[in-house]
Image 1: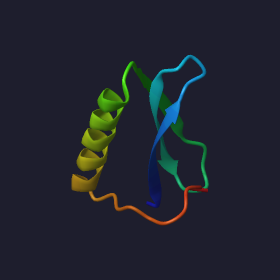
Image 2: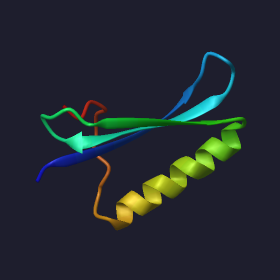
Image 3: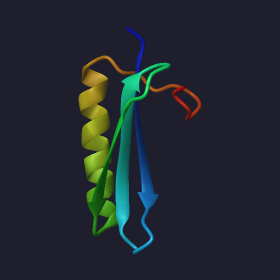
Length: 68
């Protein structure tokens, strides 16, 4: 099954930092979750923890950003 998992760090309109993750099967509608943090340090630590866990499950980085 061809799946994707995308992570991004983005600023919010209110000056906070958000870790946005999207996932699903390629060619299908997937899910999305946004976790908001008060500091960039917290957001980066969360981002790296998620990336580490997904890497252990077999996900690998690719070039490009659009999973569809």
